[in-house]
Length: 187
Image 1 (cartoon, one colour):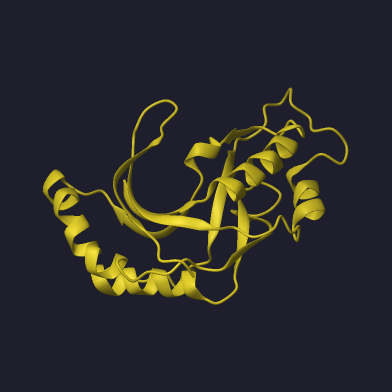
Image 2 (cartoon, helix red, strand yellow):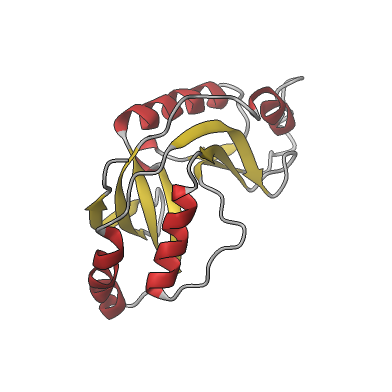
């Protein structure tokens, strides 16, 4: 799968990695994202063939040349699929000047993609797994408890540096391959 995302600067990536380490200490069953792979998806492109993937950067150049860094702030954690049995756990981001939402709209318009009506900036941290029958969470250490304790946490600003065109590699330990990137204009 291919997508466009904003790359996190080193400081917020490292801060989020420290938060993830604290969460991992809860021993909840999950596949944790490697901090080097943290990103903020702004447009999902789906599966592209080799020609489409080769031509896409030139189509993005014009839109990407004027994209300014959004003003973002970590604002706790959220989940897809519910807070008791989430499918993904993410660091929520407050889009202070709505610039991130504008980036999403500009890219969708420029690439003739359908806009995501529910777009909300976030950085996925892990993908929970169902616990086995032998895995009983410690009292006060469930996914719901984690959300209750951290739902509105403030971990500071989240600077971004580049718009990146990624391809997800399939297979064990899948990571992301950078196909092209464009530096964001300072805010």
